[in-house]
Length: 252
Image (cartoon, rainbow, N blue to C red; front, side, top):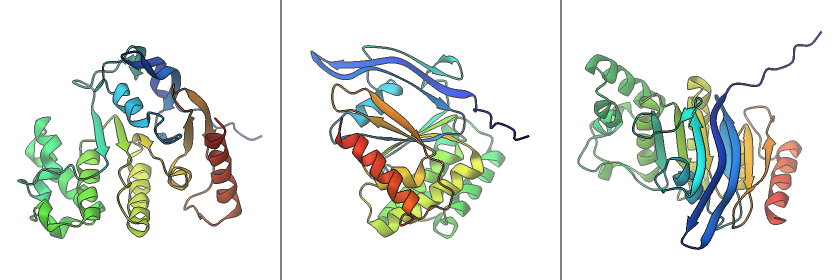
């Protein structure tokens, strides 16, 4: 007798997320769940408000109406351990690589021994140990993103939010960093919401893919991605799922 796979507990619950800028309705009554350990990729038409959606989740923007729960309690960026990785360079140029990775841990007053352990661990995972004394101006674009990734995971976040972090990188570097992200996600079981305009990237990374409509933005559908890892972008199953998601966005 086969055992049914249990659904993981809900980590993030969003109910009726609505955002207006003046009279312009951007997000229209969005509701969805993110499960513990999800790598949820969010895609949609260009200009549909994906970044507004992410900023509203974290209350960077004042939301018009919504209930957003993290582990069953109202989300509070001041008390919840939420990490962010955005497009472009977010390192601090006056700090070394090691100091940049330690930055979030220092803010949280993590004891020095534990801080040093975490910094060393994640520098090693992203391959930057020998560059720990370098400054950001001495690093390539992909290395700068590795610093941001190490800094985010070092804080052991409850939730990691990523907004097109690889959008400015060439395809070879992007694949390398995507593979590093998958490695870290599988190792840490961190819950990740990943915004991207790149459908292939969403199919490559996500265990679920949430498709948004054009403005006023709602959730069109969420697709479970059960393709085995490591994923082959040339396989018929991968191409079929990429086409399915593309068509869902195209015909909103």
